[in-house]
Image 1: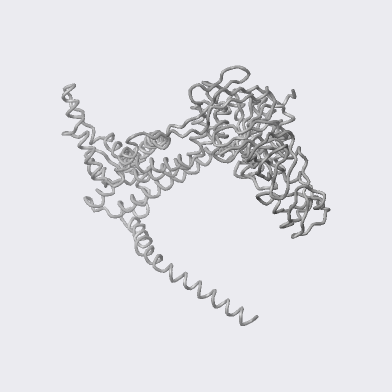
Image 2 (image 1 turned 90 degrees about the horizontal axis):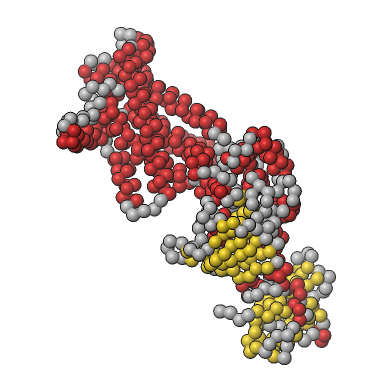
Length: 353
Length: 283
């Protein structure tokens, strides 16, 4: 492990739920294992319990009775946050306005009694790591949003935390800056080899940063998996629709075929089912001549986006299908087309409420 | 182009005239009720037998100087005690929800409506010759404790009407405080004490200066309470009153009034600049 990083702890969460005093359940009892050095993303819409989960790991919330938080097999449930040795990055950055940039970054070291020389060396190291050279003596209100985000990250990493906890750290930034900082953050987390838990509602952020993603919904875990698993093999309709664009089609399955208004789709070993629900990603649908296809429809609209064109095809399924076609093919609205979809691209989802 | 520009110019002029007309009442009122009496006060102060040196009497005359020191020390003590009490109470009240909280806040801020005379009266009821504390101590120890008419009674009275003003300012400042700041400090290893010292108190600094300034200025100039209690205490407002009404010493009372204003203003300015430095150096 590089000298810059701290020791990345393995985190084990066991039956951690959270019920607030007014009786609302923010988080149903859930268990999670985070491998040492892994970046785990908690992804979901607001109110899904992801921040509550993060705060339980941080020690800012106590789980309901029966819940336990372990760092490297040591029970931390009763240990207050100031002794958990975690690093936190907040959406509001929460930088101390009465301190300079360097004092902010060095604060955790000062509190831990690190002597002045060692502190200065570590601060310089963090300044270089996060590309904020020249800002050391600035006050916080003299920094831009992106600079604040870097300072907040430097401050959290400076203490060599056992776990780095990030709560929507990029949400307050504008889109172009967010994209740039996202890839910087990604390479930083990889090079540090630190255990990181990252909360976001942005699926693109989750895909890029996460070794694994935990998709959450209404206080419960909807699916845990690598970005590829989450994207290609969603276990339910919520995950399919929340992560990426998804066409949801419904129809009867018999003999390995899903029958739709505009024809049928071949499936990989699907059991017969009178009312099946399946997901198809827009980029997995090919546009072919009508005569060559088992599923047909009419192009309702064509939007040229540059790297691809997004078609809306009606009549094939019970709802219009979104198709991401190559930017080279020539289709016009009103044209009838055939759709080719491989069996691997059709993901049958369990029936739900 | 030319006529249009002329037109624009015309609009500009009438707009400016309109603003001047709107400001006129303010100018008249300021002149009539603030600037003219102030100028007159300055003139009266310098017009006595001492001449302009009357303005120095507040420093040079031992009796006046002692009163000035009394007043400043009392106002400073009131301000510091108020800030300490109101900060602890304000932090607690803003951060905790409990039954009766609203009633407690209402009671704490109730004295806002009281004139100084009523506050003085309350202190007499509490610690005067017929007061509660006197009755209790007489029953328990056989000795009657009376402090309403001492400097401590006055201090208590000032405290009573300073706390509501400061507590409201502190509570508003605490409410605006980003709870994330405290959480960030704790995550970095700061104990609850260190969080207060390094994060909360520095963040509340501007509120302390603002509300402390009001508490100090009010205590410097408070008259009603002093008048009700003052049997053996000399504070500046009382001195001005006696010089003016009893001794008919217009020049000295005018000079003392100006002195009171200038000194209160100077101390506040000093506190403000020092706190600015303190905030910057707190890291």
